[in-house]
Image 1 (cartoon, rainbow, N blue to C red):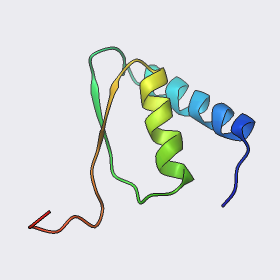
Image 2: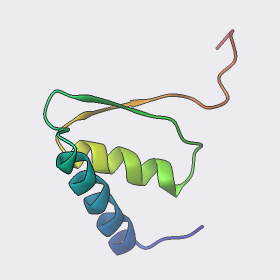
Image 3: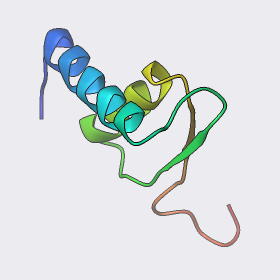
Image 4: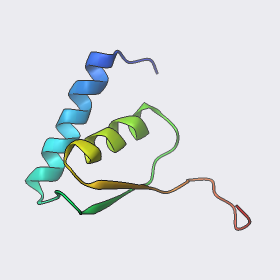
Length: 65
């Protein structure tokens, strides 16, 4: 799925606002479990904009990786 920079920016702002509304902020850690899609980029940017730390979890990680 292709998105424009403006669309990504707006979506990340919405994620950040939703996280802040739930009390997420600086120094909080947020786990992000998504495949490598635009949704992952949106979520990580939103977490960072909320001032929190994004902890990405690889969906297809094997026991050896």
